[in-house]
Length: 191
Image (cartoon, rainbow, N blue to C red):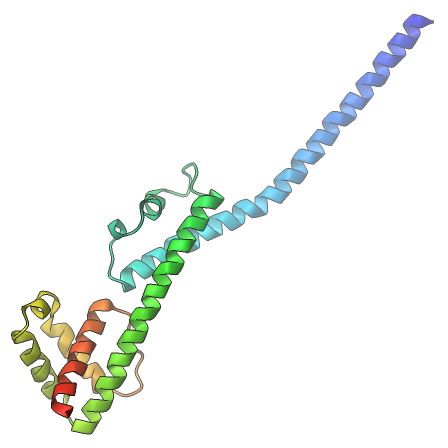
């Protein structure tokens, strides 16, 4: 009788083991189902970070070499490389992008302010786009620091821009400098 009890116990032990394997498979499937959306979200975050970083770098006129080492490495990695979807890396890159957005916002506020001031003064002084350009040119000829970044073509665009009403100011650092130059020139003649 004892052998049959052991055999029976042995058979009883095997069946829960099968249930255990089945339960393990169910648990694995459950974990996969929970992780798959995380993976999909991480891939979407990676894509958004990549796109946003490239847009911000372009509008801030920065190269990929001018960002943190983490973001620089992130931008160079392909989607399939190990570690590119890690939460801490994605969070770190998103934090850096938030800081870049603040810089972009500050630049936009500064450019808008320069545009509004120059536009108002140009209207008050009845200055044409060509007169604004000549004024800006005269300001740069006496200042070697301005000659480093000054572009006659971009200055002409800024002068045309200032002569227009209700326009959307571009977020471009160099264009903003030219708008400030035009506003500075107008302030000298408006005084």
